[in-house]
Length: 181
Image (cartoon, rainbow, N blue to C red; front, side, top):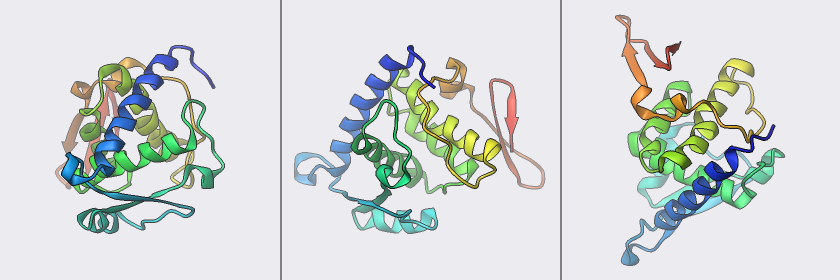
């Protein structure tokens, strides 16, 4: 599935992701974070706690795009691996949230602040879109195929994210009037 309007959004997303990656792996004495990133052929973390432990030691592992046999329509495997690294570090790692639906939504919200509005459209497809497809279409059993179509703009605006906790402590979130649990 290709959306001709996605080209500019993915170009901005690619540029901004590469800059974030360079900051992530850049030497500390040059103003970077000095995180050593390793691309792995198997999913490297059972949970976010293991990833956060690695980040505390200035290392991070990411699951290789090439190992999934699911090529991205706009990103090379290396660019998609860079995105996985920055999203895990600046999204999940920065807030200590896991990889379940709520953790993915919280990581999107945190990481979206690092992207321009145009690039955030692609980020939203990559995170919110992928998360929804995995949870609601594939029932959490596998990742959805990579997409190259943008979600409606309302889903890319962090101001539309609404979180609520029920009396039982269950977290839910809503976007554009749609509520998720």
